[in-house]
Structure formats: structure tokens, C-alpha cells
Length: 430
Image (tube, rainbow, N blue to C red; front, side, top):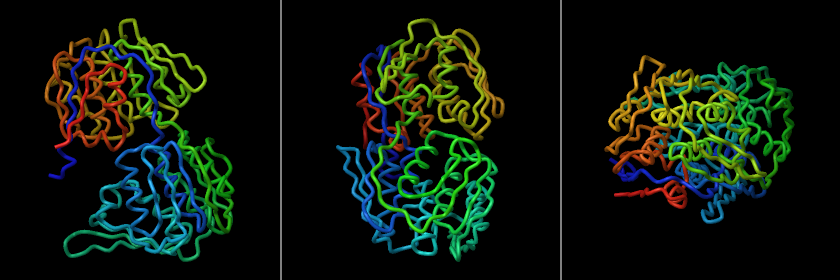
């Protein structure tokens, strides 16, 4: 057990949250931006509004491992990257295996060093990691992809760039990381690339914006069909990372589950997509005032139906939090998870707290309203962790969330930010 496994959060419920909170920069925007910054052969890229989370620290570690200079200034939430010194094509197993975003560094390595080696991927599990269409996209552009399996079963994937040139590419599912990776690969390839069935997330548009400012020729962001004209080089720029809509959604639900009222600085109602509509159906009131989203809930929570979908549909990352919220709704809520299997581990943990939830495959029925009571529960992943914090805020007695290092991967200083609005929550690391 690593030290990280021993992080726990203690939440004592019953306090109505009130106040102002700063929404962090978007995790799903900053990680590909770090990959993009490695494509600049000279100059220093400055990223602002960087979320200070574990995944960013690992990305910085990985950037240094391949020879870049990277300085993370945590107090200023700023990251400075000088990629002129990029020297190694190897993404080492000890970092890459702990950081799923490591393959966002592949386009930079292919263009700058001619090859990329991803260690520690495990034998023959390309398909299970859902990275097939990234590799297939690189192949269609002229790269060769070979997989080697060592005697101990560990694998590495070796991608040689050859002569990367434009091609027509298709995303099997509109994955944001797949779309971003193919755009980055196309940005410095010769000729024109057409990418079909692209992701529409705001984070993808933010990445297109930084690449355009670096000199990339990209058209069609947000339409599902993106055209990239290859250029010879990209240059370093300064860029401010957009706010994290999942972080914002969790704080909106913290106000909702405690019957509170808060101002979310940096949050955008538009970015929440269908989630905002569903929360309004439940009885949450929104009011956008410039860069601040005002949220309150002072009426009883109504039940809802949720079907997760790619953006602008209901974000799968907010499915666990809304399951926690719907435990308090006045009647049964129905949730259908279309994006990920195994996203209902939360149901078991909420049941320990007094919830009544029936799970059938990718569908769940939440029988509200059930009073929640404190218990010792396990954060099986990041989203389960944030949902259990919400449940704890509404529960009687104390909730202890174990394996809570997952929360640190996606939300910066969540205990401090909630405490400033009256929550009784502490983070403990053994």
C-alpha cells in the first residue's frame, strides 16, 4: 500500500453551505495542453489557472523525464514549460502507468524525436485501454506501431513516426483525448487531415485555441468535423486554462444537497450542458452574473431521469454526484449510464449510509427520499469520492471516506474550499 492509499476525508454533515468558491482550472484541458506545449521546439510556454492536482504533478514529472524543463508554481497556479531540451522518446513505466494521460505526450515525441516508447502498458491490453483508435490514427498518418511483451508480461508500445502526413481519420467514439491526440499529430504532419466524429467538449475547443495561437491551422472545432492543415513548426505561447466544469458541477451539488447558496467564481452555466437543466428540474436555481455563477436551493428536491452521454449531454463524470443528490429527492430517480461500465460502485457505498438504490446492469433506480447517516465508506475512484463527500455533507454524524487519494487526482484543495463555506470536513494523510 502506498502512502497515497491512506488519505482519508472526514465529513460531519448538517451544515448549510454559504459563500463564494473559486472553481479550479480544467483537468481535462490542462493535460493535453501540457502535451501541446512539448511540441514547441523553442521558447517557454506559460499556462495559467492550472489546477494543483496529482495528475498535473505527474504530467510535470513525465515532461521532465523526457527532457523538458517544467516548473509548477503552485501558489500562482502557473506552469512554465521549456521543451527545447526534449531528449528521450521513452515514457517510463513508473510514471506512465500511474498517469492515464501519458499518451497525450505521444504526438510531441513523434514530431520532435521521431518516435515514442510507452512502457508498462501490460501485455496485449491495447483494446482494454481503449487506445486503439489513437494508434490506428497514427498508423493512417504513416507511423508504425509495434507492441513488445517482456518475459514478465509487461509490455511496451513503440511508435515510429516515419514520414507523418495528412489523412482522413475517424473516431469510433467522440473521445476528447482521442480527438486532441489526432489534432496534435495532424498539426505538424504534411498536408491536410480530416478528423470525423470529433468530440465537442469545451476542453477540446480550449485545446484547439492554444494550438491555433501556437501557429496550428485548425478549422471546425465544435462541429464534429475538424480539418487540420499541417505547418512546419509551433511556437511557445501564454494561455489561461478554462474553468473545470466537473469541479463546478460538484460544488453546485454541494449547495443543492445542503440547501445552501453560493457564488462560483469562474463557472459557466453553458459548460454544464444538460446537467444544469437536470439540476434545475430538481429545484436548483441558477443566475449567471458575469464570471460568477450564483446557485441556491431552498425548495424540496424533485426526482429526475438521467442518461449520460457525450457533450453536450449529461457528463458521465457528474453521474455519481447526482446519484448522491437524488437520494434526498422526493421520489424515485432513474439513472442510465451509457458511457462507462462499472460506474455504479457508488451505490454500495451509499447503501451503507442508508440509501435505497437498485442496480441492474447500466441502470440504477434511486428510491428517495432516504435520510443519510454517517458511515465508513470507500472512494473506489475520483467520481465516487466526490459523490461520497456530497453524501457526507447531508448525512447525520460523521462520514469517513477511505482510499480518498483519488479525490486529490481531480479536485484541488476540496476540503479547504468547502470549509470556507461552512462545511465540517478535514483531509487526513497517514
